[in-house]
Length: 386
Image 1 (cartoon, helix red, strand yellow):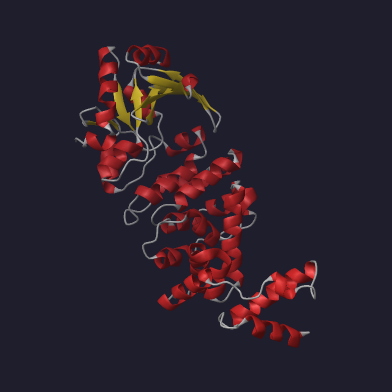
Image 2 (cartoon, helix red, strand yellow):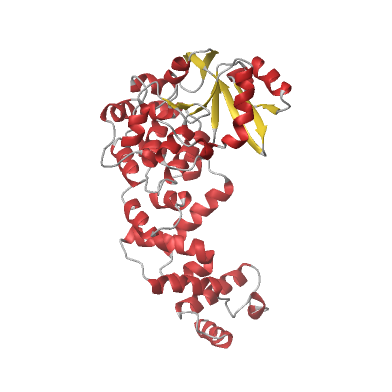
């Protein structure tokens, strides 16, 4: 099979392929960019592989005036900078030992050995500069069928790096065919070896979970993860049940991983996944308003039009409620509205912490009346409450 190399920056990379060939080295496209090209999906990264070692790659770059950055020479990777873009080139490798997190590798010249150390058959694809696909492990058929399989024995691949358990569900969510179903042998291995995830850093786990949640529809993968006990291991207390309805309610919106994470629920999300502070605040705000704010207007007022609609969708998913255009308009109106009562209007009668309480009460009254009250009406209502 041939793919169109113009989708893989061949115009920029042609001199690089020529430079490697001139030196007697082999240079190939590898991995996800080939998988995506076969599926007709844009490549997110273009990676390359070679039988040249890093020590051999440096002079190739210098001879042809190409800038190179050492981004992992000890592991065989240099980054070549061409046309304003960066391209990682990694020497063919073979694993010697692994501790479940990191592998000790040796450089080699065998494409077959390099393919055998990868995780899934659909990621063990290579291509020449011409676009001719090289398929040493029958991964091409798996890509075309939406079938995700580990290379060799699933248990052996997992113990090399336990994060591959989560990668299995992430890749199935992105590239698997739900009608094809999940590979039974792979699922059994993931379930049996899931305790190995306790050895993986929370940052790596969080990154994988967010990538999984960014799939067009992660619901089938999450349901299988939950049934196997893996979802609860990485995010205690989480439930995949409301996610299918949330995905349906999104109605063509771009996937929002943090919104879906908030939908899953769970205890101590920040501690479990090591989110950034901004990510944690967003998840907390979406979850708080989704659980506690019953008016669409209030969602928009508190979070703005976009995030307010996200928190309203969460509430709808949790309560199994179908949203309406009127509710979406209410969120927009709330986002554009300004409460007529300010802190200055409540002073000097209210001071310090009491001022904040009074201002929140004024806003609640205004929202409860669909934001139609004037300042004088709100202040009078507050006076009546005293």
